[in-house]
Length: 40
Image (cartoon, rainbow, N blue to C red; front, side, top):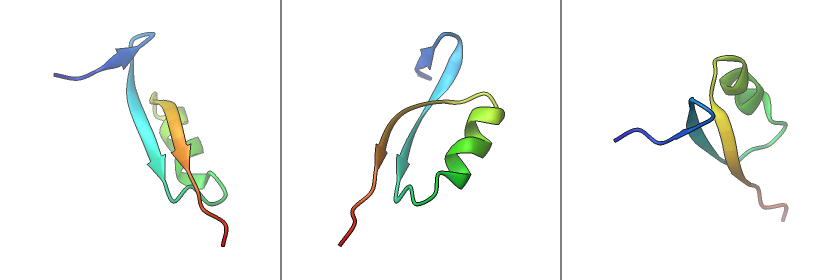
């Protein structure tokens, strides 16, 4: 079952970095609901 928010598929970003992949996913129609990044 695919989960949707405002008719967009949901993505969760792990190892986010500079958000490059996240921006691409949002342009492709995904909705990012959570990001995880750890700065050591």
